[in-house]
Length: 296
Image 1 (cartoon, rainbow, N blue to C red):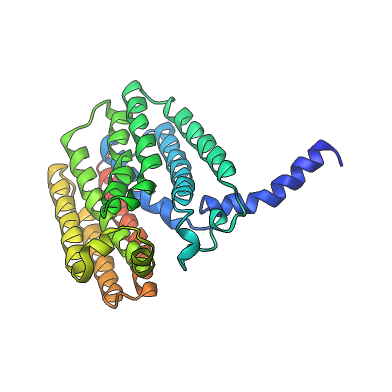
Image 2: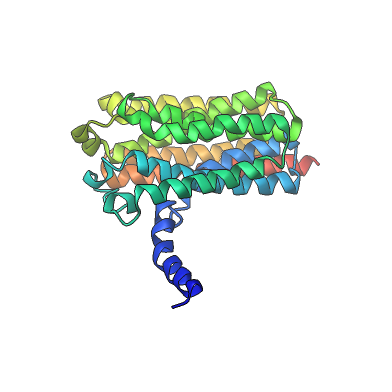
């Protein structure tokens, strides 16, 4: 067999495992990161962003989310095999080695950094912080009950980066949007953590779902309520009009459905509540885009 055929055979055998490792078959995680980035890009541009910047950030979201999945599984390889939802992940089953995973992580992050280098100096500096956040988040669940909050920082860091890429600065509305997204991310990732709460308690892992305990639904109400209020303040501060507020009302409807499903605290219902957040993000994006493009 020639080297090219050997390489082709190797790629065919390994590719499905790598695809599973980066959650290529589960796009919800990408969307939850992409929607706030697009919110920021459209707000920073006061309409349709430059196509180049749009492509860079869209590809960057996919690359960094994929890399984040890898480092998450690497950090949790001691835990995933004992958790029902994650026991078939490639690192947990041994289908992908730790060395392979780290090589793929580095490749993805280098490509993402290369894309950022096509923007400006401030955005490049900001990306260094983004890399640190993505690489460090998964290890926190061993030490703190607030990894979901840290994830909110990591997932939201693309917001100030979007403003620096387009405006060369970070205005107040960027930080307000960042804080709103922090509350939203902490909320939906708490739903996600509630799916694994029993397993996490047994294995000694930590999360906001464990921290909140029986007050989890109250805490989620505060988080989502704060998110909606921050978005209202953002709309007023950026003079968004009716399309935005209609989209925000639609988002509230999706959030209400999440509480309707998640009030049982059953694994399946909490997972459905988590997944439903992709529609929250989409509805808000639609409102922002329609409002700003309509004014152009």
